[in-house]
Length: 168
Image (cartoon, rainbow, N blue to C red):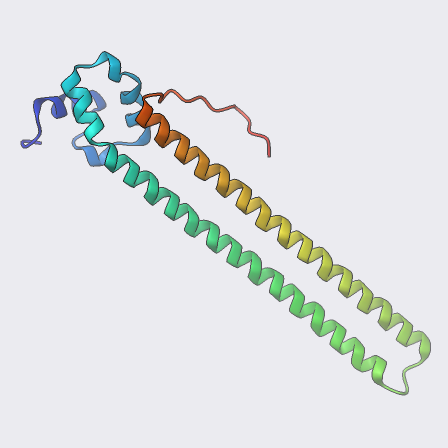
């Protein structure tokens, strides 16, 4: 802390921090909301730290993208597994249907079971697509919130209020 200017030291004291690396988004938002009330030198020191804040936001978004990717991969694996199981069922039923000594009523039953397997696959495919859409929806919302917060910090409007309940 010895190589910091007096203004930087005052900013750190105000936030009760030892260095600028440990500041949170809340600290920055709090400080940005009072920029017009602080000493210009302190304000300049705070604004000089914005690249670090933006870097932190970008890193958070990248980490979030990694989590989303893993979620999509997990969803894909689950769907593939279900599809493989249904395909195996259909193949086994088809073998029974292909046997010449299988009675007609039994073949009819197997055809019904094959149709049920096709319906389950269609249901799983629809569920998979809905999961992907949900993941994309929430990831888009999270990205927009990050961008809004970052923009709010830069334009000095850091007292952003979010609705208590967001519609899903």
